[in-house]
Image 1: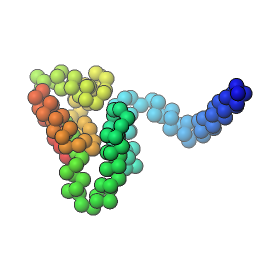
Image 2: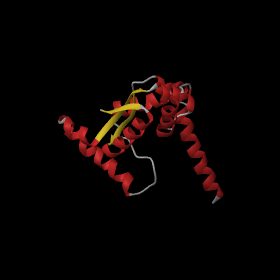
Image 3: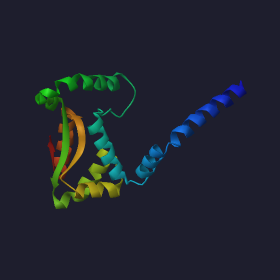
Image 4: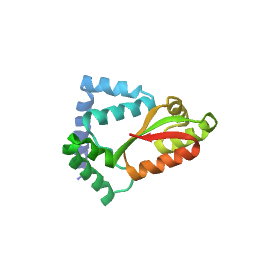
Length: 157
C-alpha cells in the first residue's frame, strides 16, 4: 500500500515537473511573479475580458455559486442585444472623490477589493478607474451608496 502511494506521488511530481519545464510556461510564471498586486489584478481583469471568463462569486459552496455560473453562459448568445446584458451586470467605476474624504475612500476600497493599504491608495489616486466588473445591480447599488456616503463618486456602466 505504501509503495502504491509513493508511486502515485512520484507520478504526480513528474507531471508537475514536466509542465514546469516548458520554457514558455516558465517564462510566463517568472514574469507574473514579478508583478505588483495592482498589476496582477489588471492582468486578471484583462484575461477575464479577453477570454470571456465570467466572475465567480466568492463565498461558500452551495446552490448560489452554481446559479450565476449557469446564468452567464445563457446571456452570451444575447450579447447582440446589449440592453439584455446591461440590465443584469454592471461595471463599477470610481470617478472621483472629495479630497477630505480620501482616507475613508481608501479604507473602503481596501475592504471592497481586498487590496493592501498601499495598493488601495494607488488605486484611489488613479481615479477614474474600474473598481469591479460584472456586478449584479443590487450589489452595485449598495456599493455606490456606501461610496457616496463617504464622499466618492462611483458610476455603473
